[in-house]
Amino acid sequence: MDLTTIIGIALGAALIVNGIGIAKLGNFWDPPSVLIVIGGTLAAVIASYPLGILKDIPKHFMVLLRGKQYNVPKLVDQLVDLAMVARQNGLLALEEKAEEIKDPFFKQSLLMIVDANDPDRVRQILERELENMMTRHDQAAGLYEKASAYAPAFGMVGTLVGLINMLKGMNLGDSSGASSLGQDMGVALITTFYGSAFSNLLCHPIAKKLRIRQDEEELYCSTIVEGIIAIQAGENPKYLREHLLASLKQSQQKKLLSKANAAGGGEK
Image (cartoon, rainbow, N blue to C red; front, side, top):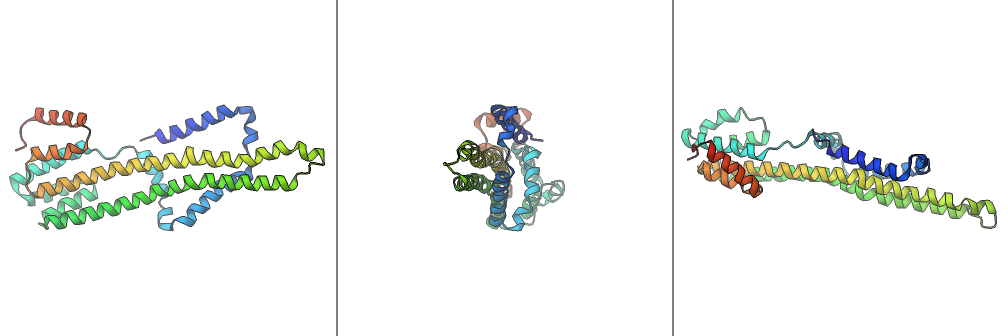
């Protein structure tokens, strides 16, 4: 479980509260401003996205908390093992191995080459499916990026509403009107504070974390595509490993290649 998003948001909120001061927190509470910023942002997001995307919001938070799910080095080892089986026993021998794979994309990819589909057609289908998958994930992250942009805008809307009401009700000829000027100005600015905090402390971090998870899944699935096509072409397992590890950092590549060489020379 990855709690960094929750920890970061909680830490940021705590630092803001500490900067304000516990005794002065009441000065920063204004229900109408909350409704304008939070309600307005939610309304704009709802107006911007179809129900099919909005209903997946609970899943987005599950993605935030589940931690890193895709282990590329482990995947490379798995693909190399499959390549060795295919070279020794043929592609049909991979059908039994496919039943042991839980990941739907990986399993489908493996079964496509077992069925002796044309390599170009296999690549085209898998890359199209990967592209569609990334488009869906892009829409999910984009939802929070839009919310991050909407929140400060509604903060300004609330500020303008507060300033207009303040100016309309201000009577400089009356001492009571002048004395309330500072208080009214403070209330008008609270919505800007709410909008900025909601955007930068909640919406933007969520969008960024979803982008990171998207990149991890894209790398994982791209590795599957390259590995499957190489297995179908009968590529040497040793060279397959080096090819698939090329997307990782060089320090990781050296470590994993050294580990594989030390494990034995079964990859021929």
